[in-house]
Image (cartoon, rainbow, N blue to C red; front, top):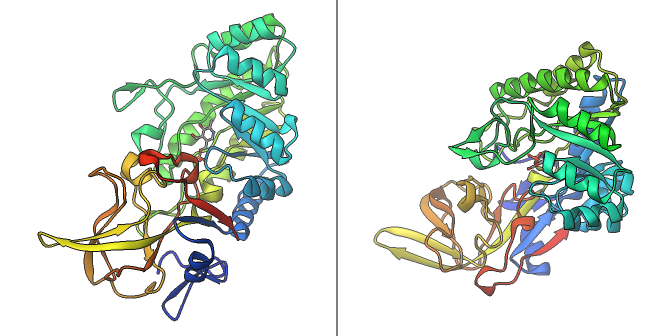
Length: 405
Ligand SMILES: Cc1ncc(COP(=O)(O)O)c(C=O)c1O
């Protein structure tokens, strides 16, 4: 199976094992619906990302884990021990990161449509604020100017992402104007304004979108690196920049035909460009989220109802898009593994449907898989990022449980 990964996901006698434990035993013990995360996998991937970048640069490398992808406290604490920094998007995330043990200096808040009320809370927590608009800058100036801030810039060319909804750079995506960041043609003026206000501008930031993985998309990202470096040089003439932050975005394989993210080239070329630019900074920052946690997590659900309708087989499960919204929101593909027939041949065309009263509440439509039976446990693969954090109580259903192995 393309998703097998020794020690993380194994198949023995047809059964799925997660981190060496039988998925069915885990489901019996903790009850479904249940998110299961493999902590060793998270640490391995974090270390791989860090060491791949670090080997190409003498600068300090900071990985700001994008906690919007998975803010489970135990996962935050694992990453804290690994030396991670934090990318937070709301005062609530900042608070959760502080409570998990992160130092305020290691938390960078990057929000959008940020209210003055939000900023008062952020100033109260004394975290660093990455400014998204001139309005935000001016309103922060009314609260305090005694702050180290960074500026989020738009590189002025189209972003990248697995869906138009996750592309965050350029003028628009799918006809919808992009709401994020300060355009590149205003960024130097914004830095001057910030300096005039008395702020200490310590960083320049970009994030072009989430879930890109092809080499063409990496090429697009690398073009934006040049643009950011050019602006960083101009800003460095009047501000002491401590860091440049290239955001998140690296994608993962959700499907067999998805390419592996070219991490080595991404790291090597980004670091080379930074070095060649001559920009003087201390640290190079990235904000991976999905890449670190996506494939560590599986959502275990139980088949509770199997029916035939006009020739279609519908396997109803005890979960729905209230637990994992990606298939419905983005049309995303998630592999579905039958935990007791993990290597069985696909023999039936099955629609795996949730228990919400919505037609679109399906995890997979007409997918070839081993014939599911009531009582089977299905593992929805690569659900560790943007899974639980996007869960809701729609239809008044409970939130799923979570367990970290
Ligand atoms: C500013 C910022 N940084 C990082 C991320 C994380 O992206 P990903 O999970 O694709 O790495 C996001 C995601 O939306 C973001 O908005």
